[in-house]
Image (cartoon, rainbow, N blue to C red; front, top):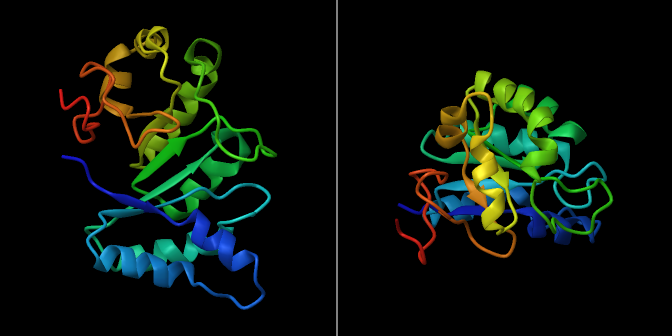
Amino acid sequence: MTRLSVNLNKIALLRNSRNLGIPSVTRAANIALDAGAAGITVHPRPDSRHIRLSDVHELAALLADRPDAEFNIEGNPFEGLVDIARKVRPHQCTLVPDDPGAFTSDHGWDVKHDGARLRPVIAELKSLGTRVSMFMDPLPEAMPRLSESEDPTSWKKTWQIFIPGKISSGISPTFASSSVRHPENPG
């Protein structure tokens, strides 16, 4: 079943463009969760252009009082994401290969190139009890590479595939998480 996690980055971007502290990121999270959202997603970038580290901690505290709500933190695992995950223990980390100065996330992981350096990151996040998902390009040839790890079954059980420009995708039942399916591919 597809579950909605509301991304609060634009709320924070709007707040940061004013010196008034509004709109409130935590208030927006409460509104989304009260309206039925299953979780909250944030992408704290190194330049704090939208979500700030203080927001992450405030949202973690808020979500601690809502045990049914999930916390997903997106980001580049080589730019501080793992340090944040160690401190707040989110339910999920979505690994995004964006450069620190990138305007937006515009491409997915090249598993052939980055797989070896991602494996220890994934292992550490899993040891924290955090589910891992990946930001991937919609390239059919990239999907088999997900299974080219030392333990292919761990990739299949661990990774969800997120495609830029789509909500989420179950490209293939072999590689997609059973908890998330794109409406065009219910398989």
